[in-house]
Image (cartoon, rainbow, N blue to C red; front, side, top):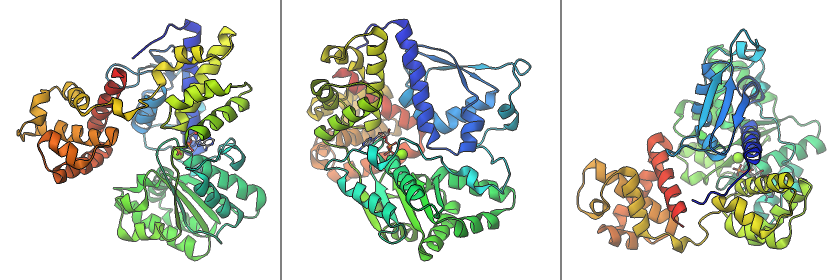
Length: 465
Ligand code: ADP
Ligand code: MG
């Protein structure tokens, strides 16, 4: 991976902005109470491009952060060689600065408890992000349909498609659309009560209500106090059977009484590991996919976001960035933030040269062809510390079988090779490859170590380009 020389001040500025970006991201994914209790009290002590040091009120904050947002931290903050976020935690001396929020928190949990236990059901509500509006959502071929569907629902809640199920990969605008619907309804239909929640939030609220024996009140709240329910990231309902049933009941009651539901997810309903009943419910209305915008749309998004930040991006520069970052709009925004910080600090114009110098390490594997199945094999062998030749052998021990399955899975994902071709390479049948892909896809969601190993292989492949 190329690292370019950066002035220390610039690095610090960037790492501060990485932390702010992380906070912005997390803000939309947890309740206001949780954010206020767990995230706001954290302060940056120092930061550079290699590590960040955070002051926390007590050790539970560290656990909370790593347990709940481990994955997100790796997306935003500097990383260690192992792929973990490089954070040093400094525990604040209690007597130095007593904090009200710190004293509220006594133990780590997935979400903080609502202040008025069991009563304040809206405290798990996610605050709508001010920037996520239809006006700021740029349309292209890949998202035109889903945007019209979202707008249709916002214009006639409960009367067009119900539920509206929006699915697509990470950072492609699902939450943006969900919040746009919320804003639009709140502004145009003031009488309607809109509640936006994350699936995690719903589950935690239910757990809290169980603790405080207020489940019935919570049910009543959901069933009588809401006209529009916006649910972000329903995939987190998978493997949570007890909650699935409760969610399904709430869902049916709301739909049956003509209330609007909008759901986002990282996959289509049919691929969710949920009950048939739940899947059928989610397919009741309209299922719309949001894909990665094409090059022209990415350029338009970049220019629009640059304008919002108060600077102009020439077409050449915008094309150059959009060509190289093509998997995730959030990363496009990150690139823009970094670039503008540089340009401002150095007081220089944004040129293609500057883009190359400052963004090179963010550029993604554009041409998939550049990754070969041999490279995948080698990288997997290095990360899992096995011999590459063993991965192609007949050996069936677990130590070899798992990395072999990972290699098959990555070959399918990264080079989109046919199952038959991958099978031939490993001397296996296509159904063995299919089984491997499915099994690893499932495992990475459940097994943190494996997920990290897979990430490491991907990163090592990226750095070879
Ligand atoms: P997701 O929920 O799909 O992971 P988000 O909705 O959080 O993604 O979007 C990530 C970032 O990309 C947000 O800042 C959002 O504003 C931006 N974004 C995504 N798609 C678009 C688009 N079509 N136009 C403008 N901004 C977009
Ligand atoms: Mg989202």
